[in-house]
Image 1 (cartoon, rainbow, N blue to C red):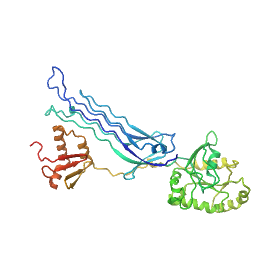
Image 2 (image 1 turned 90 degrees about the vertical axis):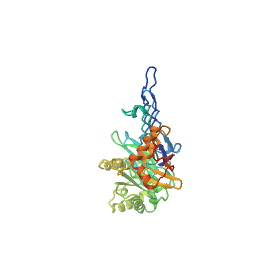
Image 3 (image 1 turned 180 degrees about the vertical axis):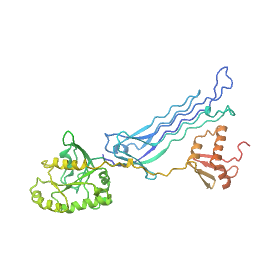
Length: 423
């Protein structure tokens, strides 16, 4: 089943917890802290699998969670890092952040990997907090939480040449005649319900990748018929083969209508070079009409070819004409090569919200610090209070009117406000 748009959930691995531990060996007094750091959580990365041409596998698995880092050990042993989770997608996949629809990456380069969520760093063990003034700190950090995101994947097929035309114009027949593709073919509109791709080998040196795009009708750019669901697949093609149905009552009107739909969906589509072909020339009726159609198209500045997919008439000539145009098109960088502006986020920023039963503090840095704190150890709690002071949250809460014993919520933690922790 062909699927070209899907939504998934991804989450990188949590960092391993740092260990609070002191060296304990016979004949060694006051061995000092030797708790090791936790391992880094696994990243979430995307990579291209050239053998895929649909997003259908994601219909059966929509959640991807990377491995967590392992906890640190005694004797300064660092925990093992979690393995990264590589998600394979077909070439031409666009990856959007589902929350704000920002483009994160355009997967077109075969060897490219895109990291969308970094794994959390490992928490520091007690050995990392020892100083000359505090040689036995009862402090350690939990691992940093992983990053979770909802993503939208959108596939745009990558092909040299896109085959377009009205329903039943002969697009699938042409693709089947010049490649090993086996699209469904029948004598009624909308036989092709999904895009099909095939490879045509003209000789030992020339190979073309063709995409058969389902037939367009008037209003396709608004979603009528099968239109806008497949129009985006034409955006990556460099040359268009525009097929005109030899049995159509008005092929010139068909030509104008298709180009109008392309322009309304994306003005750049109407600028792509086209090779126009009049199909089904093996039929006597079509042969009688061909001179008039050729003349009418000539008045539009076109040099159409008459072809027959059934009898293989003029097919190689048609593809060679398309190839001649293709090799003269300058290379243009894909979306992935263009800089994407994203405003930098101030992780130290915070917001204080007054609740009916206390206070809520929101902010990236403070919520991360809360998640990484060992609340059962006094030293870690005291360190968290110093973080509140350093970020300016302590002063902001006092200014807002916090009182002794008030409930303060940070992330998933619910705390009780104590004015003087040492008191």
